[in-house]
Length: 459
Image (cartoon, rainbow, N blue to C red; front, side, top):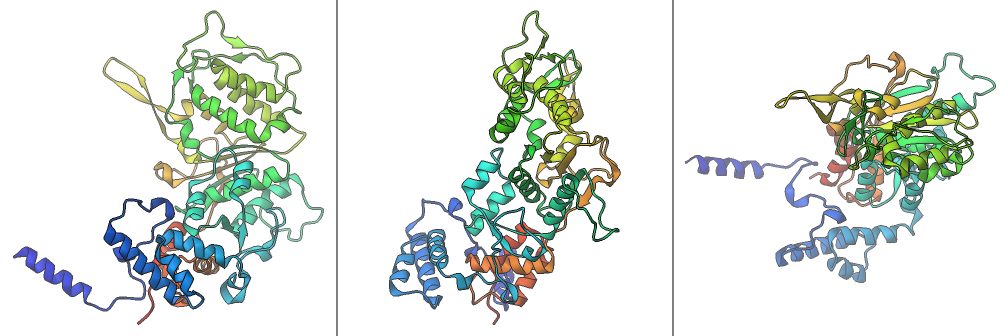
């Protein structure tokens, strides 16, 4: 009897008139990497019919285009259409007829007039400038839109200009009551508001300007995984595998700078337990040869696992002494350094205690913002750390900057961009619908990208 009632209720609900934006499983958008190759015959037939129908609705589709699209998957057909669209510049139109893409060639030259437009990148170029890795949110945006382009936001320009004015202060200030310059900044804000992407773009800009940048895109890895042991000399916990990886990543882009910077600290480097090889006998420190450069220091940590953690800690002190070129420390997932790691210390035979992140030697060396160096940390909600208190230890009270979600103007450009990238059809796209997407998601970039394909044409 209960099943009958539920079926009747479900049938009555489905028969009601749908709203312009509705979520239904059959129309769920799938990207190319999630498209299964093991389709049933009925699934392939449905896909062909769908592609044929979409091609027919396209006023510019020819008979040959319809035939080709019918033989491709949804993602393949969309990629083929986008490749053809790139030849038609008239399609690159944003809200109110404004250009959808900026013609400014670099992050350095971006200004207020470029906001609410997209800047094109190349994947190869990004991987070259950011060899440590690209943020997950950036890769997801590229995968879903099938184009490596990012929205130019005023919040990023403010972040960039803050550090530009610190290094190259203007001769005259146009506004005496302008924002206070900060050498230490913590990017905070709601989930999916673009903190990690803004941090990566800041690193990109700084490296384009010739700065020495220590960039950690996944700070959580410093507190999870790998081998760990307690160093009796320092009283802190060593993580040699993470240390070696950090040094290798740091060397990839900065090697030319490091070869020109001499080591300024002569103290020997304390050694720890190597990754899986134990302690060295009768040796507890390592002295760098006279005349060594920072490149020699980093290579020492890469080659000798016992010295890896000590080299990372020494590198932090050396970076504070560099005066020839600007130095920036950029840490993503910074909030994971203010809670417990996944490591545990045995207390008794049957009990153990969690090791806090501040007890890890590498975190202890880089976490503090109580210094005169330029440093940016970005909170990440993907780490599941939870909400932290406002007054964090070793962080200035005014360091937190609330990074906003999309504004209404930014959302308009984003939705027109997704229309340009064929995430939604022209017949369903309207100002009313994209505003519904914006207000439903509250400006959350990830949710907007997910909701846009569900736009439906008003009855």
